Length: 322
Image 1 (tube, helix red, strand yellow):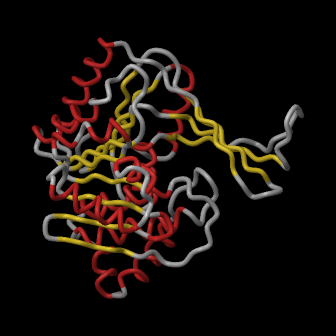
Image 2 (cartoon, helix red, strand yellow):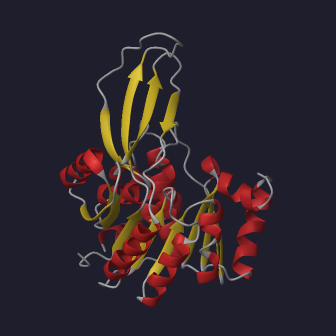
Image 3 (tube, helix red, strand yellow):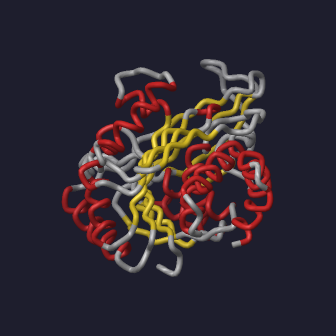
Protein backbone atom coordinates (compact mmCIF):
# COMPACT_ATOMS: atom_id res chain seq x y z
CA UNK A 1 0.00 0.00 0.00
CA UNK A 2 2.95 2.32 -0.51
CA UNK A 3 1.15 4.40 -3.14
CA UNK A 4 0.62 6.82 -0.24
CA UNK A 5 3.63 8.79 0.98
CA UNK A 6 2.71 8.55 4.68
CA UNK A 7 2.64 5.51 6.99
CA UNK A 8 1.36 5.94 10.53
CA UNK A 9 2.23 3.41 13.23
CA UNK A 10 -0.11 2.60 16.14
CA UNK A 11 1.17 -0.17 18.39
CA UNK A 12 -1.16 0.41 21.35
CA UNK A 13 -4.51 1.30 19.71
CA UNK A 14 -7.71 1.85 21.64
CA UNK A 15 -11.31 1.60 20.59
CA UNK A 16 -12.50 5.01 21.80
CA UNK A 17 -15.99 4.97 23.29
CA UNK A 18 -17.60 8.35 23.99
CA UNK A 19 -20.87 8.96 25.78
CA UNK A 20 -22.49 11.59 28.02
CA UNK A 21 -24.42 11.74 31.25
CA UNK A 22 -26.29 14.52 33.04
CA UNK A 23 -24.09 14.46 36.13
CA UNK A 24 -21.50 12.02 37.45
CA UNK A 25 -22.50 10.70 40.86
CA UNK A 26 -20.90 7.93 42.92
CA UNK A 27 -22.84 4.74 43.68
CA UNK A 28 -25.64 5.65 41.25
CA UNK A 29 -26.69 3.82 38.14
CA UNK A 30 -25.99 6.48 35.50
CA UNK A 31 -28.03 6.42 32.29
CA UNK A 32 -25.74 7.41 29.44
CA UNK A 33 -26.41 8.63 25.91
CA UNK A 34 -25.86 6.43 22.86
CA UNK A 35 -22.10 5.79 22.51
CA UNK A 36 -19.87 6.93 19.69
CA UNK A 37 -17.05 4.62 18.56
CA UNK A 38 -13.76 5.81 17.04
CA UNK A 39 -10.52 4.11 16.04
CA UNK A 40 -8.14 5.68 18.56
CA UNK A 41 -4.47 5.70 19.33
CA UNK A 42 -1.92 8.30 18.21
CA UNK A 43 -0.99 7.00 14.76
CA UNK A 44 -4.56 6.10 13.79
CA UNK A 45 -5.72 9.55 14.86
CA UNK A 46 -3.01 11.09 12.68
CA UNK A 47 -4.32 9.05 9.72
CA UNK A 48 -7.87 10.16 10.52
CA UNK A 49 -6.76 13.81 10.58
CA UNK A 50 -4.94 13.41 7.25
CA UNK A 51 -8.09 11.93 5.73
CA UNK A 52 -10.26 14.76 7.08
CA UNK A 53 -7.86 17.26 5.51
CA UNK A 54 -8.14 15.63 2.08
CA UNK A 55 -4.93 13.58 2.17
CA UNK A 56 -4.14 9.87 2.17
CA UNK A 57 -2.05 7.64 4.38
CA UNK A 58 -1.80 4.03 5.45
CA UNK A 59 -2.37 3.16 9.10
CA UNK A 60 -0.24 0.29 10.44
CA UNK A 61 -2.11 -0.95 13.50
CA UNK A 62 -1.55 -3.86 15.90
CA UNK A 63 -5.01 -5.28 16.65
CA UNK A 64 -6.35 -8.20 18.66
CA UNK A 65 -9.61 -9.93 19.44
CA UNK A 66 -13.21 -8.88 18.90
CA UNK A 67 -12.52 -5.22 19.61
CA UNK A 68 -9.75 -5.38 17.05
CA UNK A 69 -12.26 -6.51 14.41
CA UNK A 70 -14.60 -3.66 15.36
CA UNK A 71 -11.69 -1.24 15.19
CA UNK A 72 -10.77 -2.47 11.69
CA UNK A 73 -14.37 -2.06 10.52
CA UNK A 74 -14.30 1.57 11.68
CA UNK A 75 -11.11 2.23 9.70
CA UNK A 76 -12.69 0.71 6.59
CA UNK A 77 -15.88 2.75 7.02
CA UNK A 78 -13.76 5.91 7.35
CA UNK A 79 -11.98 5.13 4.09
CA UNK A 80 -8.56 4.78 5.71
CA UNK A 81 -6.20 2.23 4.19
CA UNK A 82 -4.63 0.01 6.79
CA UNK A 83 -1.98 -2.63 7.34
CA UNK A 84 -3.08 -4.84 10.23
CA UNK A 85 -0.78 -6.89 12.40
CA UNK A 86 -2.80 -9.35 14.44
CA UNK A 87 -1.62 -9.84 18.00
CA UNK A 88 -2.82 -12.00 20.86
CA UNK A 89 -5.25 -10.90 23.55
CA UNK A 90 -7.81 -8.14 23.17
CA UNK A 91 -7.45 -4.59 21.87
CA UNK A 92 -8.03 -2.14 24.72
CA UNK A 93 -10.76 0.44 24.84
CA UNK A 94 -10.90 3.91 26.36
CA UNK A 95 -14.04 5.51 27.74
CA UNK A 96 -14.75 9.25 27.60
CA UNK A 97 -17.77 10.46 29.56
CA UNK A 98 -19.06 13.98 28.96
CA UNK A 99 -20.82 15.55 31.95
CA UNK A 100 -23.64 17.73 30.63
CA UNK A 101 -23.98 19.76 33.84
CA UNK A 102 -20.40 21.02 33.85
CA UNK A 103 -19.29 20.55 30.25
CA UNK A 104 -16.27 18.64 31.55
CA UNK A 105 -15.15 15.30 30.18
CA UNK A 106 -13.63 12.35 32.03
CA UNK A 107 -11.33 9.84 30.30
CA UNK A 108 -10.72 6.27 31.44
CA UNK A 109 -7.89 4.55 29.54
CA UNK A 110 -7.24 0.82 29.94
CA UNK A 111 -3.88 -0.91 29.34
CA UNK A 112 -3.29 -2.71 26.07
CA UNK A 113 -2.60 -6.45 25.67
CA UNK A 114 0.88 -7.56 26.71
CA UNK A 115 3.39 -8.61 24.04
CA UNK A 116 5.65 -11.61 24.37
CA UNK A 117 9.36 -11.18 23.41
CA UNK A 118 8.96 -13.34 20.29
CA UNK A 119 6.00 -11.26 19.16
CA UNK A 120 8.04 -8.08 19.46
CA UNK A 121 10.65 -9.36 17.01
CA UNK A 122 8.04 -10.67 14.58
CA UNK A 123 6.24 -7.33 14.66
CA UNK A 124 9.51 -5.51 13.97
CA UNK A 125 10.07 -7.70 10.92
CA UNK A 126 6.60 -6.87 9.60
CA UNK A 127 7.23 -3.17 10.17
CA UNK A 128 10.56 -3.38 8.35
CA UNK A 129 8.93 -4.94 5.29
CA UNK A 130 6.11 -2.40 5.31
CA UNK A 131 8.36 0.63 5.70
CA UNK A 132 10.71 -0.62 2.97
CA UNK A 133 7.85 -0.76 0.45
CA UNK A 134 8.30 2.90 -0.42
CA UNK A 135 6.91 5.35 2.13
CA UNK A 136 8.43 8.83 2.41
CA UNK A 137 7.27 9.58 5.97
CA UNK A 138 6.75 7.20 8.87
CA UNK A 139 4.86 8.62 11.87
CA UNK A 140 5.12 6.73 15.16
CA UNK A 141 2.68 8.16 17.68
CA UNK A 142 1.24 7.14 21.00
CA UNK A 143 2.24 4.86 23.84
CA UNK A 144 3.89 1.45 23.64
CA UNK A 145 1.89 -1.58 24.85
CA UNK A 146 3.05 -3.71 27.77
CA UNK A 147 5.85 -6.07 26.80
CA UNK A 148 7.48 -3.92 24.12
CA UNK A 149 10.85 -2.49 25.23
CA UNK A 150 11.14 1.25 25.72
CA UNK A 151 13.63 1.48 22.84
CA UNK A 152 11.12 0.06 20.34
CA UNK A 153 10.45 3.36 18.59
CA UNK A 154 14.21 3.76 18.35
CA UNK A 155 14.34 0.50 16.43
CA UNK A 156 11.54 1.69 14.15
CA UNK A 157 13.45 4.93 13.60
CA UNK A 158 16.50 2.93 12.50
CA UNK A 159 14.42 0.86 10.07
CA UNK A 160 12.94 4.05 8.65
CA UNK A 161 16.34 5.66 8.13
CA UNK A 162 17.67 2.51 6.46
CA UNK A 163 14.69 2.58 4.09
CA UNK A 164 15.47 6.20 3.14
CA UNK A 165 12.30 7.62 4.71
CA UNK A 166 11.80 10.42 7.25
CA UNK A 167 10.83 9.36 10.78
CA UNK A 168 8.41 11.52 12.77
CA UNK A 169 7.86 10.64 16.43
CA UNK A 170 5.19 11.90 18.82
CA UNK A 171 5.74 10.08 22.09
CA UNK A 172 6.80 10.72 25.67
CA UNK A 173 9.31 9.68 28.30
CA UNK A 174 11.78 6.84 27.69
CA UNK A 175 10.04 5.78 24.45
CA UNK A 176 10.77 9.22 23.00
CA UNK A 177 14.27 9.56 24.43
CA UNK A 178 15.26 6.19 22.94
CA UNK A 179 14.76 7.59 19.43
CA UNK A 180 17.33 10.36 19.90
CA UNK A 181 20.28 8.07 19.17
CA UNK A 182 18.77 7.40 15.72
CA UNK A 183 18.24 11.13 14.99
CA UNK A 184 14.67 11.13 13.68
CA UNK A 185 13.63 13.74 11.16
CA UNK A 186 11.09 15.38 13.45
CA UNK A 187 10.27 15.17 17.15
CA UNK A 188 7.01 16.61 18.45
CA UNK A 189 6.31 17.14 22.15
CA UNK A 190 3.50 18.88 23.94
CA UNK A 191 4.27 21.21 26.83
CA UNK A 192 3.67 18.49 29.45
CA UNK A 193 6.06 16.07 27.73
CA UNK A 194 8.59 18.87 27.40
CA UNK A 195 8.39 19.47 31.16
CA UNK A 196 9.50 15.86 31.75
CA UNK A 197 12.72 16.62 29.88
CA UNK A 198 13.37 19.95 31.59
CA UNK A 199 12.60 19.07 35.19
CA UNK A 200 9.06 20.36 35.48
CA UNK A 201 9.66 23.93 34.28
CA UNK A 202 6.55 24.88 32.30
CA UNK A 203 7.64 28.36 31.21
CA UNK A 204 7.75 29.35 27.56
CA UNK A 205 11.39 30.32 27.99
CA UNK A 206 12.18 26.77 29.11
CA UNK A 207 10.37 25.35 26.08
CA UNK A 208 12.44 27.57 23.77
CA UNK A 209 15.61 26.46 25.54
CA UNK A 210 14.61 22.82 25.16
CA UNK A 211 14.12 23.09 21.39
CA UNK A 212 17.50 24.84 21.07
CA UNK A 213 19.19 22.22 23.23
CA UNK A 214 17.78 19.27 21.30
CA UNK A 215 18.84 20.78 17.98
CA UNK A 216 22.33 21.55 19.28
CA UNK A 217 22.59 17.96 20.50
CA UNK A 218 21.53 16.84 17.01
CA UNK A 219 18.88 14.45 18.35
CA UNK A 220 16.56 15.40 15.47
CA UNK A 221 16.52 17.57 12.37
CA UNK A 222 13.37 19.37 13.53
CA UNK A 223 12.00 19.80 17.06
CA UNK A 224 8.47 21.07 17.68
CA UNK A 225 7.03 21.85 21.10
CA UNK A 226 3.31 22.65 21.09
CA UNK A 227 2.26 24.84 23.99
CA UNK A 228 -1.52 24.61 24.04
CA UNK A 229 -3.32 27.85 23.28
CA UNK A 230 0.07 29.53 22.80
CA UNK A 231 0.73 27.68 19.53
CA UNK A 232 4.05 26.04 18.67
CA UNK A 233 7.79 26.56 18.99
CA UNK A 234 9.80 25.11 16.09
CA UNK A 235 13.54 24.70 15.77
CA UNK A 236 15.72 23.29 12.99
CA UNK A 237 19.33 23.86 11.98
CA UNK A 238 18.60 27.13 10.15
CA UNK A 239 15.08 27.80 11.39
CA UNK A 240 13.56 29.24 14.55
CA UNK A 241 9.78 29.77 14.51
CA UNK A 242 7.16 30.90 16.99
CA UNK A 243 3.69 30.27 15.56
CA UNK A 244 0.75 31.86 17.34
CA UNK A 245 -2.70 30.26 16.90
CA UNK A 246 -5.93 32.07 16.11
CA UNK A 247 -8.32 32.84 18.95
CA UNK A 248 -11.01 30.17 19.18
CA UNK A 249 -13.58 28.94 21.67
CA UNK A 250 -12.25 25.73 23.16
CA UNK A 251 -14.61 22.77 23.60
CA UNK A 252 -12.05 20.02 24.13
CA UNK A 253 -8.27 19.71 23.75
CA UNK A 254 -8.56 16.00 22.95
CA UNK A 255 -7.20 15.27 19.47
CA UNK A 256 -5.44 18.60 19.01
CA UNK A 257 -1.95 17.09 19.06
CA UNK A 258 -2.80 14.34 16.57
CA UNK A 259 -4.49 16.88 14.30
CA UNK A 260 -1.36 19.03 14.48
CA UNK A 261 0.89 16.13 13.48
CA UNK A 262 -1.47 14.98 10.71
CA UNK A 263 -1.62 18.43 9.11
CA UNK A 264 2.11 19.02 9.53
CA UNK A 265 3.14 15.75 7.89
CA UNK A 266 0.54 16.14 5.14
CA UNK A 267 2.03 19.55 4.32
CA UNK A 268 5.55 18.12 4.28
CA UNK A 269 4.44 15.22 2.05
CA UNK A 270 3.08 17.80 -0.41
CA UNK A 271 6.47 19.46 -0.53
CA UNK A 272 5.56 22.55 1.50
CA UNK A 273 8.25 24.52 3.32
CA UNK A 274 8.62 23.57 6.98
CA UNK A 275 7.22 26.91 8.17
CA UNK A 276 4.01 26.53 6.15
CA UNK A 277 3.58 22.89 7.21
CA UNK A 278 3.90 23.91 10.87
CA UNK A 279 1.40 26.73 10.42
CA UNK A 280 -1.00 24.23 8.86
CA UNK A 281 -0.48 22.03 11.92
CA UNK A 282 -1.30 24.89 14.30
CA UNK A 283 -4.41 25.66 12.24
CA UNK A 284 -5.55 22.03 12.45
CA UNK A 285 -5.00 21.96 16.21
CA UNK A 286 -7.05 25.16 16.55
CA UNK A 287 -9.84 23.53 14.57
CA UNK A 288 -9.69 20.37 16.69
CA UNK A 289 -10.16 22.18 20.00
CA UNK A 290 -13.44 23.65 18.74
CA UNK A 291 -14.93 20.16 18.29
CA UNK A 292 -16.26 17.77 20.98
CA UNK A 293 -13.96 15.19 22.58
CA UNK A 294 -12.56 12.46 20.25
CA UNK A 295 -13.45 14.52 17.18
CA UNK A 296 -10.50 15.86 15.23
CA UNK A 297 -9.96 18.83 12.92
CA UNK A 298 -12.34 19.99 10.23
CA UNK A 299 -10.98 20.80 6.78
CA UNK A 300 -12.83 24.06 6.12
CA UNK A 301 -11.99 25.48 9.56
CA UNK A 302 -8.36 24.38 9.28
CA UNK A 303 -7.93 26.08 5.92
CA UNK A 304 -9.62 29.23 7.23
CA UNK A 305 -7.32 29.37 10.26
CA UNK A 306 -4.31 28.61 8.04
CA UNK A 307 -5.07 31.72 6.00
CA UNK A 308 -5.45 33.73 9.20
CA UNK A 309 -2.15 32.54 10.64
CA UNK A 310 -0.22 32.93 7.38
CA UNK A 311 -1.56 36.36 6.47
CA UNK A 312 -1.14 35.61 2.75
CA UNK A 313 -4.31 34.33 1.13
CA UNK A 314 -2.76 34.05 -2.33
CA UNK A 315 0.19 31.95 -1.16
CA UNK A 316 -2.01 29.74 1.03
CA UNK A 317 -4.40 29.13 -1.85
CA UNK A 318 -1.45 28.10 -4.01
CA UNK A 319 -0.29 25.60 -1.38
CA UNK A 320 -3.74 24.17 -0.76
CA UNK A 321 -4.34 23.67 -4.49
CA UNK A 322 -0.99 21.96 -5.06
